[in-house]
Amino acid sequence: MTTEQIALSPRAPLRERARDGGRRPWPAAYARIVLALDVGILAVVVPAAYLGRFGWRAPAVSGVPYPSLALGLFAFWLLALRLTRAYDPKVVGYGAEEYRRVTNGGLGLAALVATTCYLTGLPLARGFVGAAFAIGTFGLLAGRYAARRRLHRRRTTHRDWSHRVLILGGGPPAAELIRRFRSEPYTGFHVVGVCLPDSEAAPVLFDDVPFAGTPAAIREAITRLDADTVAVTASAGLSPAALRRLGWELHASGVDLVVAPALADIAGPRIHTRPVAGLPLIHVEEPELGGPRRVLKAAADCVLALSLTALFAPVLAVIVVAVRLDSRGPAIFRQRRVGRDGREFTMYKFRTMAVDAESRRAALVAANESDGVLFKIRADPRITRAGRFLRRWSLDELPQLLNVVKGEMSLVGPRPPLPDEVARYGEDAVRRLLVPPGMTGLWQVSGRSDLSWEDAVRLDLYYVENWSIAADLTILWKTAGAVLRGRGAY
Image 1 (spheres, rainbow, N blue to C red):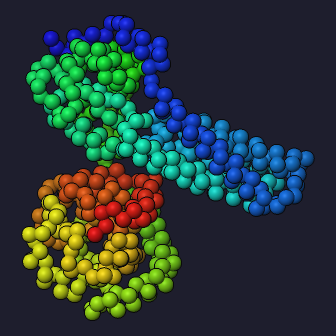
Image 2 (image 1 turned 90 degrees about the vertical axis):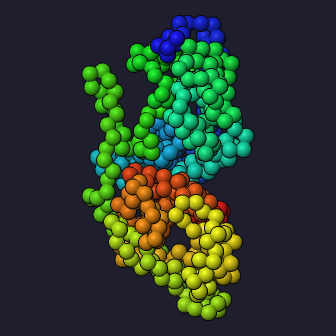
Image 3 (image 1 turned 180 degrees about the vertical axis):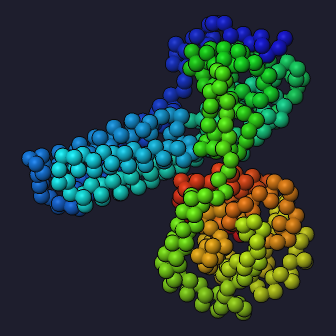
């Protein structure tokens, strides 16, 4: 029997599932929670913007009172979010697309209001509208982030509000998919079984994921395991016709069908579907390593770094004094690092170790807790008392703002490596040097020193090939949370 013989004719089990509603209720329930949160935020922001501009007065413009305009703004804002599909269950809770749609809804409505005022001559108070859109957009994004954090915690601790995934296919593609889902349970994909092609031996299982039979028995497996998603891997061996028929049957039953391609670690903006001769060909754009957006990123880095340096100047002065009083030696530690295109530069940090730390490293090699080319010890005896505090809150990295101003580093990018680490890089890891290193990055918000070498390289390569302005802003936002939690900081 082959995978072409998947039984897809209408049968009772899946038809009964369809009559019962098929899909799990939690995606719609979570979307309703997000909607209620948005309503609450706008219900506070719009009146607050009104009161901040007019107080308790109720001025009228062209005979229309401002309270009515404020109510209209509230209603049309929610409509704009609906039109940009900001409540789509397939988007809510996943990736940067949700934030992008929320922002587009606010910007689109703001553009519509500005155009309407210009064409009709309506003298709408700019202070009221500007404050409402600025504070409201930030509030909506913050609310979505808070809701997502709670969703992730619930998925990690309880495993409910997650998709129950039945994988179709075996071998390395299926094993890699299971590993990815398990390493990031907050994404909400819980593997409940694997249907192996009949060329596979049934006893070949994946850890504690049960064998659910062959593809011919996928219907019974879905019902038995209460799966709501079928993930087809590259090893499933389905023909286009069989995959199409599977999609028809699953859609009628309320079960989602996802296809996991052999391509990995490629973000959505680089992937475009191009229909050719009836085939949905996937076109993968080249990584953007230069061009206008890179120039914009470098300019924004410089401006933000200068602003942050001025803002943190009193803190920097206090840290300098604390480091000098805690132990002998300079307050600033200078170290050669490797930047873009393999060019070395001097990176600045506040000193967190004793002045003889480098000479004592050889004696601590046996205590190294990191794999790969990194050297990390959780309770490193060379770290000073002030150094432990600075590392806990990542304050030791503030002098790197000077490296950003000089163009040697970026606010967001791969981890800046040491020359001896680069000398031991494999072919893949060398691609980390195609962009400037960053003060923070995916490695910072994903575990920091707790990451394995393999995961650190994977995250850095993902950033190099899929970076965007929106992703940078998201990473900067998440960095604050990572620093406050202190996980992996040592």
